[in-house]
Length: 605
Image (cartoon, rainbow, N blue to C red):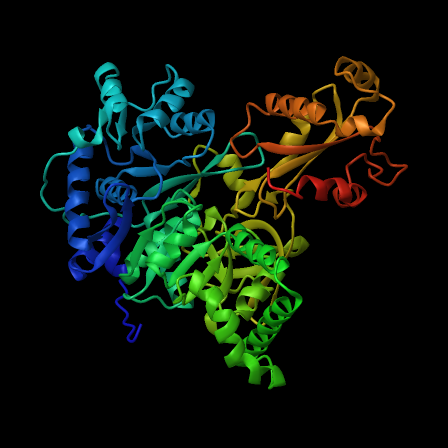
């Protein structure tokens, strides 16, 4: 891009999130707002004027549902322009939006609909609603269900269920332009449900000011321009994608392209050629693993040249950052960049200006490799409760081991037990219908307990541990294992259990079987109870996973154990795997079963 230009909309000028949208429509009516893919037509685009007209239609349809300001409406959609249209239309009426994950369990989504008393639900298609309808049953919410995708089954449901309408017939063909409204920036804008330490998720209440302040704080650390193209593939129900990949680009006037799927991400990147990408570590880990697999099949000289390119690029990075001096490898960088680095970067579209990783810790080896190859990979950190960005590494001061510097307006301090405490306009209003949970994390003067241990050096935050026993998967999903482990331990067959998955792409479990019940179980399955090999029998493992899933059936969708390792050796104080107060020493148990754990993660299920 030969020229970069800024056109930021201030928080004060926007006022509210729907005010931000109106400002953008007025400022940039002919600029491309969104690109998206249609199966029969290929890549399509919408400018801001067209988005404004579409939002007006959705607003008129919602206005016909006799909704009152503050009522909740929800969306169960994959990333698409209609997600934005519905969100903006609802907020322009003072409604509160509740995003749902498309891959969540139906019973969990039904719980959220009831807890938030959602009146209108926008669903992707008939099949998704049919699965959800079974879990909703006779419950009163939602009152209205709008099916985005038409078709024979959608029309049949609309004809037989008075709650259901198809979007095409529900939306008017045209509507008056949306106009500015007098609104309180501190009013509730959305409720985002996040996994807590109990079996049910908690609804994080975020205001218009929370989200606007957070988006603005993000662009003060990483410049964003009208010419930028964001590639959106994390679910918009994920707070990081919603703020960083929706409100922030809107504030800057940048274009957003909605990727088709993770499986087609590589192809989409080469078509769209994004300049900015926001992802969870798992995405970078997959690309890293693919590169490693390809290198393993190459001759030794090719592997050596690749390693040399990473080393030279890393030296160049440190020198440009002012943290390294001259090194002979720098002389080789121009050649190695052409032969190695540019080829890898071309797979990412060839013009990536910033790639942000958040939602979970980014492995240092992955960061080192990509940065060495020339990708400006920046680790950030945040919580849904902080809208969500707390910190991110600047391009000019990128320390990959850290999670970056606090965004503008974010106060941070280290509290008792080295816990990171944060305060700012982006900190949530509280948890929906859960004052006790709110009081546990929010102090009377507005400081939020993150539950993460940290240190601060040279203005950068370094996460050093976690006070709460929460697993963070590589896709950013946060899983509280304690309740799952307690539920498993209630099964008489499972004497002890720990759930694993920190930094991994899926959950596994180490299960100690009840020795008294093992003999009968083994004989029932035709196994030798005296043989250690019996515990590795595929049929036994399959049956145990079925039992685990049945035990955890009332938990949310995140509680899915993909693999298990079985043992008859109990964890005791004597063998050093329990504390004197009979608490499991997780690290020691994991070290003791290291081989079994690596086997469970050796191959993706």
